[in-house]
Image (cartoon, rainbow, N blue to C red; front, side, top):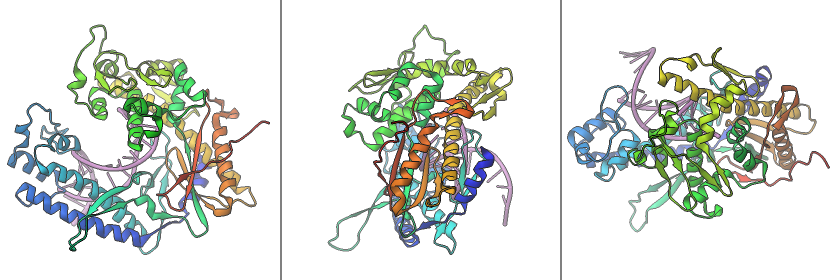
Amino acid sequence: MELKMIFVLAAMESHRIHVDKEALRRTSDLLGTKMKQLEQEAHRAAGQIFLVTSNSQLRTVLFEKLCLHERCENKKLPKTINKQQQSTSEAALLQLQDLHPLPKIILEYRQIHKIKSTFVDGILSCMMSKNYVSSTWYQTSVVTGRISAKHPNFQALPRQPLQITKKQYIQGKEEEVVTVHPRAMFIPQEGWTFLAADFCQVELRLLAHLSSDPELLRIFINPQADVFTMLASQWKGVSAGEVTFEDREHAKRIVYSVVYGAGRERLSGILGVSAEQADLQRSPGLHPEDHPAVSQTSCTLTPGAEINACLGSTSTLHCSEFIVDWYLIQRYFVQNLLDAGRLSRDDGYVLSIMGRRRTLPNINSNDWGIRMQAERQAVNFVVQGSAADLCKMAMIRIFNLVSSSNSLSARLVAQLHDELLYEVEDSQVEQFAALVRSTMESLQHIDHLGVHLKVPLKVAVSSGKSWGSMSELNIPPASPSL
DNA sequence: CTAATCTTT
DNA sequence: CGGGAAAGATTAG
């Protein structure tokens, strides 16, 4: 499979992705002036001049000059990993933001700085005198078998636009809100359209298959609404239609965090609850040595109620009429992998669905922390690695179909792990969309590799005239047998 | 929780 | 002056 991938990646790498260079230059200037404003505000708030990008200088201002840590003894402020210094991380600044104006300014500055340096100026530097980019793609740099991209890292461009308020110094003008969206800078060539095909909840479907959890299987076998939307709607107590992008994303993070073994600290952070709040009761019946992450913390999502994080209780996240015990899935998944022969303790390796292997020498370590980390990596590898296998197979099959076609001219532009981005001639969009979707969904069964997933694969297709403005494309479902 | 890349100090 | 580690941002599940 990886040998066949070489041709796919070579074709993708030689494709020129057009960029609106002028728009990129304009946003660079815009963000530059905004950052200068924020820098001045920061200096004024601090009462001195300092390098806003330097965390060590910020630490001096925040804790030695303003002594903000002395004013929040009830809160626990994060420390740096190595030395036991006060951290200037996002979590720390969020704790401090009500005590002083400076933390908020720094948070906004960092957000804009990241966008400007990496996604605006960074992309510009990848273009030199051209008006297009071509990433370099790697097949061997990710341990799970995913592919990665460099210069630019196409897989890490912000998905959400950034809103910034532009201060107007012209009399009679109101403040102007401008949205900056790096993805919108990428445009197809004249007469062509971007088409994206996304494997829906692919890792969760693989988790259902690999764990054989009946409730999780039922969610995917029955034609259902989006799982994360359902979870988010019950969590927020609103209808599915009212769930925002952020709500769904939050629910998604909670689910993946729990199944991949997040501990008390991490989970409380994601839930937006302090670790102390998550540390209320300890159930005497459980032994933390056996299942540290799960027995220390678990979360309950009940319809219309807010999230409770508490120690020792079992965690269930209700999903409409389905009640999925994510905690239980997490707890027994390592045993599932051992039973299925996907994880070998004796030989210290783990296998993906298509036989990709990762060695895990620490799976038998005497050090509890090291051993548990290897177990989390085992769980994550089987799911993430299997998803990577599926996506690579899809890329190869679609590549071969296009190559052997007389009419199709679609080109692969990028791969975003579970999503394929193509550039298609306007007249071929619908035909190609149907082909991509049926090819991807057919990977539920791959006879010669012995792959037979217990749940169907679902693919969502969208198209647009820029990468920043893609809209769902409704195509008739594939009908293999009539 | 897992897996990456990129920029700055 | 430059290599490397650390921190903190982005992405994907």
